[in-house]
Image 1 (cartoon, helix red, strand yellow):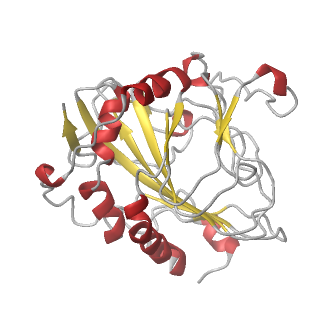
Image 2 (cartoon, one colour):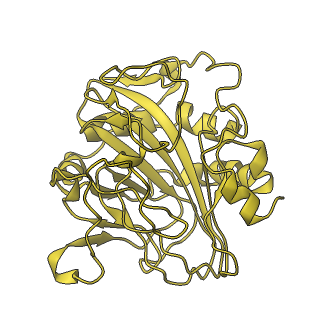
Amino acid sequence: MQGSVDVTKAANQATVDWKVSGIPAIDLSLIPEYRVEPDLITRYQSDGATLLRGLYRDWVSTLRAGLQRNLDDPMAYAFPCDSTPDGAPGRYFDSYCNWLLIPEYFEHVTRSSAASVAGQLMGVEQVQFFHEHAFCKEPGTQQATPWHQDLPYYCVDGTQTVSLYVALDEMSADVALRFVRGSHRWGRSFHPVSFYDGANFDTEGEVLEAVPDIESNPDRYEILVWDLEPGDCIAFDFRALHGTTAGEVKRRRRAVSTRWLGDDVRYCERPIATSPPFPDIGLKPGDRMREDWFPVLWRR
């Protein structure tokens, strides 16, 4: 495979066409329903993140196989990125928008209960699939995922959003995702930062707040974090502040997130190249996201 520098340079570039020949017909009757417990829905909406223990245990081997395709030949798929600085130990890889290219991802999106779970957590009438995002930190990696919100990176705006992050390996709390409880309800947008070095992106004069210094002010924030087993699923709002420590990853730390949009989400323009970038989307700010790219996979 190509070295990390080459892969890093490929980030946010359409190395392959993620849409290929278009989205095939999806039989919604094959997407199973799953009843989310009311207390988990309440917790999700109040805290911005909650854990669904063991929800996708049966999908671990499938998602691992899909992620391995990504890792074996990253340049054959869309938007590969290696965020490991030169000379740093380990490897921090991610890639997204491959659900039409990697059959295991497509199967999970269209045959698991994820759309049903997303709809119930958001409390919406219908759910659109946005994209998937796969991650791998190899043993020895000591690079933090900086504190950030996902929403400022995206070409969407709205309050009804959810990511379903499926752990594919055991993850101890010292290297797992952490969330600032309730931060999705602050009504604040924070500057997007680089996963490579933590630097702020150039937003060309857009007024955004710097991410608060959470590490230096631990008494000000309540942190949600869990020890994870393969198949555990963390559901979190696009607006929730989250990140990891720089603790050394002792064993492989893989995960796949699927990202979902609810009723009030609309297209917006950002002064940065969004992640993912959709330069030919053909929408105006305020438009609903086009269903031929982002299919509706669940209705109440």
